[in-house]
Image 1 (spheres, rainbow, N blue to C red):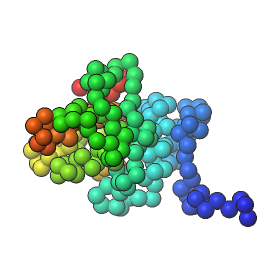
Image 2: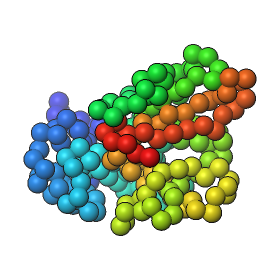
Image 3: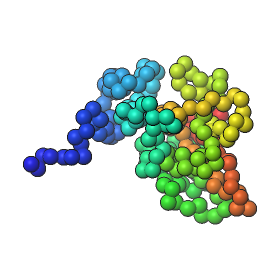
Image 4: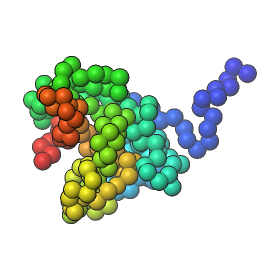
Length: 203
């Protein structure tokens, strides 16, 4: 009876540990990714494969859910637990921003520059501004999303709206950080945001 583990008995959705995935070879990861339904695995680097497999298992079985499934819902901190991603190209903007890892974290002051990778924080910020996840038309790479943006109410005809699952899958595969403000210095709501990669200049 002691080997009954109710939390791990859901058929077809095994728990995936990213630390275990990182111990696999790239070839093994590509096979796991294909099995999980990830496309274009031959072009992905090891860390991108790990993130893609993890994302596929988190969102598995959720297709058909209009409005984006579970990505960014309460409790979804993302693969890095909301913590910032760092690398050789980490900008001073990221270094001087206040790190936010959950919706419970409060800005230190009005107008403070904030940064996060938490799916829940990002989705909550966007929905408070009636913003919808989107990509810039014409910047796609094959079947991969192009430049990630938010549509604040049809203010650009170059934006194509996408699901939260697609948006966050691309956000995590590119190891982006979300820089933003909740309010301006005068306390009014701010729509400022920027996406930055610590690995390369991401325009």
